[in-house]
Amino acid sequence: MSDLSAEDAKLVTLARAARARTRAAEGAAVRDSDGRTYSACTVVLDTVGLTALQLAVAMALSSGVKGLEAAAVVTDAPDGVDVNVVRHFAGAAIPVVVANGTGEVRDVVHT
Image 1 (spheres, helix red, strand yellow):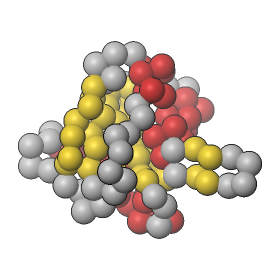
Image 2 (image 1 turned 30 degrees about the vertical axis):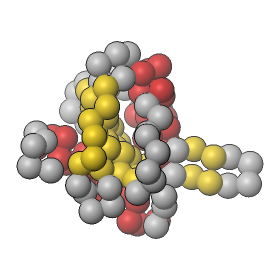
Image 3 (image 1 turned 90 degrees about the horizontal axis):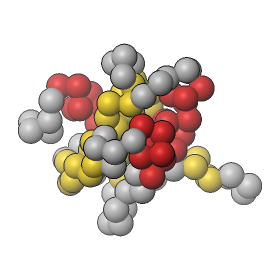
Image 4 (image 1 turned 45 degrees about the vertical axis):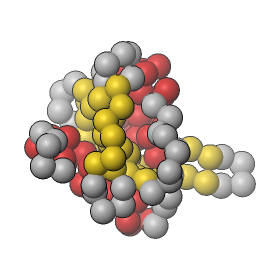
C-alpha cells in the first residue's frame, strides 16, 4: 500500500476490517466528497445479494452523501471488480483500489 495516498490506504484498511469481521467474500469502503468513510461487506441471503461495494455506496447514499472521491475493494476473487455502482452514483474517473486479503494492491480501476 506504499504507493497509495494515506487516505486511500485507509480505505483499504477499512475494507479489510469489514471483510474480516464477518468473514465475507469481499469488503469495501468509500470516501465521500467531505472525507467521511463508509465500509461494508458482501451480503448473500436467499433473496438478496449485494456486493460489498454496492452496500458501501448504499450506506453513503442513505447518509445523504452528494458525491464520492474514491473507493476500495478487498477480495481474493480472480475476476475484476464491478464498479458500475460507483460510476452510476459518482460519475467518471473515480479511483477504485482493488486489493487482496492481505491488503496488497492488485489494481486501481477508474470508473
